[in-house]
Each structure stands twice: as structure tokens, then as C-alpha cells.
Image 1 (cartoon, rainbow, N blue to C red):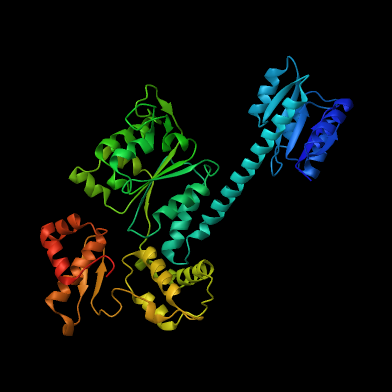
Image 2 (cartoon, helix red, strand yellow; image 1 turned 45 degrees about the vertical axis):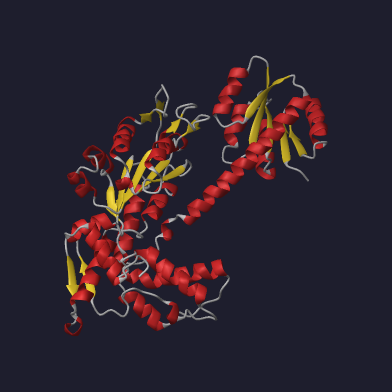
Length: 460
């Protein structure tokens, strides 16, 4: 049986004609002759399409439309109206109707309209399903953990999603979940029905970044064969997430300030302003205040972004969450790799709790993924757990402005100390060698020479 089509019209002869014609197309067709009966059948049968007459004996089509507004899944509604009622039909479309057709009409024209309405209903269902999956994926429980740091972040998110802050700045080290935080804020907030668009400012070449953000008109540059909408335009009503905002060029920062202040922009090569309503969420693992002082980040953009800001806590500050995260990732990779690992040895759990996790949750996930791939049977094999500092008795503790190096007396060789400091400085600067050399007070060439001599690479 095909899709269900409900006809609501007091002209019984017309209903019979439409039933016959649409049944031949494979549809399941039912009719109602009053508005009340139409609402009852709509709730009972869940039609995919409703053909609704504007004038009914007990009410009008607009009244029926209001009474079925809560139907799930929502049908595509086509109004059938006599000549002269076009303005009312247009009002119905603004209220959620799919289209209208004027009486008398040719049945072939109606068949095409019904088919298009069914396609629209199917697309709407697919989008709703995708949205439901995203909302399920990015619920508050996506932030796994019971530590105080995690509870504070969840509490903050619950406050923010009930409002609509136009700009949010998320800071924190690499791997702490800044992208996850942005998704949670979007899909649990009042903009959840609208698009969420992500732009990685570090991954896209600067020459393409502006086009991705603002779009371009046909012929704006050599490869611009046709007009292209940018992320800002596509995300109208929703959220744009700027990941690694600290890597955006100064020229593009100036244009972004204008967008945030005025909520309009021009496509590349365009002559008119385009107004948008977007929320801007930006994330960075860099200290934007320091970048402002160095002149590599605009002060006006920083202050615009910093209205609502918070830091995602590093994993070392939420170690109570490590057992829960471990169990979650083991369960996740069991599904991904079709494995049945149910035993996590105590020695592995103890190692995880002792480890510093410079790569944060991303490093924990990668560590477990590797061990899951290589382990056989039901146990997560400890031999496949590779952690950089497990067998190293030297420990580094960080605060906001210092590194404290604790060294056992029997292991105080200058080479090991130097290697440890270089590795930690690289982690602090996300392995950016120029910034690391500047932090250590040496040239980049000297840093590279020492890294090569000590065999220091990102994977070790």
C-alpha cells in the first residue's frame, strides 16, 4: 500500500473523483466531508499528504490547519481554493501549508503536486530523523564523568542553552572536547532546528577560508564558475563554529568583527549586503590575550567573542572521570570493531590514573583504540598500552604560569631533564616548534637539532 492521502472537502462528487484518480497512482486515499472529521482522521491515520478545502461547512481550512499543527510526522498540506481566495491560501502557506491549487484544476496537475508534496514530506522526515540522531548524540550526557569539573561545565551548559548568547568563546588544551561542547550548546538550545556549520581556521588555506565563510558571486575570481553561498549564509538562524580561531588571519578577523557587530556581509564579488542571524561559537587552545598583546589577534574581535567564555578542563584535572571514560571507549570500540572485551585489568586502570594525559581525552581514546585493535579474547591486554610517561619517574605539574619538575635524586641526568622539558613545552604549544622555541628562549633551529638528537617526535 502506498502513502496515505487525506481529502477534506464537502463536495462529495469531487472527493470520489480524486479518490479514483489518486488510487490509480498507488496511494491509499481517504475522505472527510467536514473539518471536524478531517482532524479526527488526520490524527488517526497519520496521512503523508492532506488535500484541504478552504471552505468547509463547520469551519474553514485555516481552522483545520491550526488543529493539526502538532501532528508527528507532520503532513504536507495542499489547499484547494476557489478563484479569489489566493491571498488566504498564501496566508496558509505562511502557517505551514505546502502549496495551494485553484479550483477547477486539471487532475494531472494535482498528481504532480501530490508527488512533490510526498517528496517534501519524506525529506522533512529524513531531516527530523537526522536532527534527532544529532540531538541524541550531543545530549548533556555526552560529557561523560562525575567529577566536580564536569558537573560545573554541565551546569553552565544548562544555563546557556536556555538563553541565546550571540557569541561564545571556548578555550582549553587540545583534546579536551571543545568541539563537543559547541555541538552540545547548539543541539540543546533554541537554535537546534537550524544549521550547525563548522569552520576549522587552521585546516583550510587562507585563500579559501574567505570564500568558505562568505561565499562568492559567479566570476568573482578565476575558478568561480557559479554563485556559491558561504557558511554564514547557509547557517542563517543557526550556529557557526570557528575552531582554532587563533589561527585566523588579521584581514579575515577584521571582516568577522563586522559580521558579529552588524550581522551582515557581502559575498566575494557581491554588491549587496546579506543579513543573517547566526550565533558565533569560537574555540582555541591558544591564549588569545597573549596573541592580542603580540598583535596577531585583533583586540576588538577578542572582546566581541569574550562576552560568554569558559575553559574546558584538562583530563588531569578530572581524573575521577577516567574510569567512566575508559569504560565508555571500550564499549564504543567493542561495537566498532565487533569485539567482546569485558575485562580491563587493574594495572591498566592504575596506569591511566597515574598518567598525566597531555593529549587529554583524545589521547585516552587513541590509546584505548590501539589496544582494542591489538588485543585478543576478552581482556584489554596491558602490553598494548603505550603511554609516554608510564615508566618515567620524573613528573611535571603545570599551573597557569609555571611548570614544576619533580626529579628523583637517582635519575637527575641533565639529558633526561632537558628531554622532559622540551616534550612538555611542545605539548603546551600543541607541537608548534616556533612557539616552543620562543618559550624556551632558543632558536627554532636549535630546538629542531635537539629534538633530532633525542629522537623526539610527536608519536613518542
